Length: 560
Image (tube, rainbow, N blue to C red; front, top):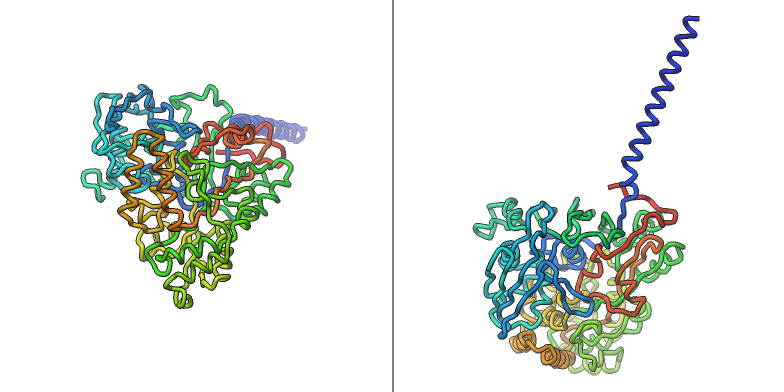
């Protein structure tokens, strides 16, 4: 009997332990249930990218920067700007002084307040570093004055009509935080390395999202900044987290989306892969135009592409219909500047596929009798299947008129590095461009101005002082109507010179979980409205909406 009682006691003890374990498990599940239901957008992106506003300026970098850093003004979809960190501003009659009054009480992610001192430091930092979007300001900013705790003034060397628009690329950094994280052994004197190494994986911003983790070759994770100054009251359906995985591999992206482990594909997926994903019941394809233009940038300083007739032959030999209908379905012709960008010349006729004209131009080239001695290179970055298709088409089209072309596939970082000098820049580079401020002048500077030579945006190495002067004259014109006419004149002059080949304005096309994600740009397109023409801002995630509770299976909840 004693043994039996002992057994019952032990049995009751194990039952008690089991009950406690169940209660603990349920408690843990309850504690984690909020995380299990965290609103997230998981997306695929191209590597590498940089999240330092003094360095980053490619597509993915621009998306991240506009989410983690605030700017003085914010771009509207029509190309104008509205107040942001700055609540108001005045411009002197001569267009040389821009004075901004900041909103008070805005907090950086670490709790420090944003002041005029931070704005001035941010501008001086990007000027001193001279990378990223610095070319928008170099030579234009005479000085920056802190007039008060919340008042800052930019003084220009000469008028710059689009200046307000360029400020959407001046991410405001926390001066105190950056200075606390500098490496003293750096190239910037008392500023050491200006915090560049620290800002590779951290942020010093005040934007709606803040950095959680950055693994340079793998992924980037940011989360909603709960104390964001503009609030979340009308943005309650915005994602709590955004995770960007560094892959554009079609099989990987398709698998992740089908498993419910990714909500948004990258924009570089081939049409066939998007068509297959479109067959999935809870997946749709979003698309919109934002001024993105696919180009073949031509090195004008290297034989044989230093000859205008050779370049025209290349421009005429491309089968553009293959691009419009198959490689970039739904894309449209472009002369130089995409139709979506204010200041694009509406009267220019783009180059078209004409083998007879291509051959005629080639015969005028001094290299015509020695084509075998002058093969050209077609550079494209690895991991981008669309660009690889363009490279193959271009190679085949070149062969049809007797030009030998070699395709060179390298990582994107190598494209950036080889563009640093005209000697290492390939004959041709397949590069997509988007305006960095909402006017054609942005692209004319990127494509032609000597200030941008040595960057991936200006692989032409034109280095033409007369063209520089024309662009400078246009952008220093205060009156917008007059400024736009000067943009038209430059485009009309440059088209017959075939400095580059402009293939198409292509729509941003992505597979997305339509049962879960609402993209503001895609919704605007459905209504026939404009989308944002500034690089990155159509992925301002504060304006997105996500509904995990509506997600159909398969769906894998996000656990931060």
